[in-house]
Image 1 (tube, rainbow, N blue to C red):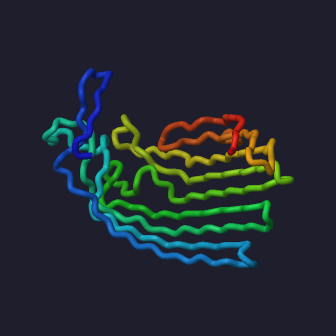
Image 2: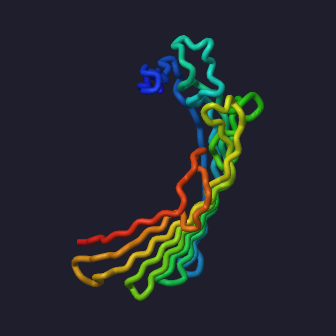
Image 3: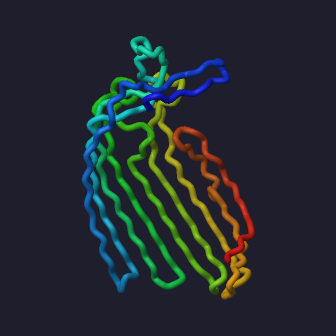
Length: 228
């Protein structure tokens, strides 16, 4: 952040991004929560609240960079930004109705805001941060040989100002992605294990954007694994 840079093959020149005058980041945070078990440890519920106060931050900026007054003649780079806050709550639950079944879910709400505008002159939200996040993981074992795991990740919409947008806010749909992993134990109960597996990413072929970039659609891999 202080001395960073990169070589551009497009302009055939070295671009400086850092600033040795940067002040360090400073923050204070506090969090607290509770974990509770029910039904002979088959159900666990957790709740956590958090609050972070940012007094000084460092950001990488193009849209609002003061290029005309920069002593290093940069058109973008790292700079100090005002503080802000991030607060919210995390809720999670884990359910194990049997030895072969495990279900976990979690939800996070985050309220993040900067003391100074982050995009343009009238937006104080933190770019790229979704207010709501939800995850779900389900695992099931069949006949001690087949293991099936399903993972779901979902996030709410978020704002960004990508390169070339001149400080304009762009709303991106939050990613919603489901993954499936299936494993079959070809050798079970021996010193050496042999597994046949497949993993399907984005199994519902959802259109999603990750940090403003279009994520991949449905794809899968498969293989053979030796355990010893």
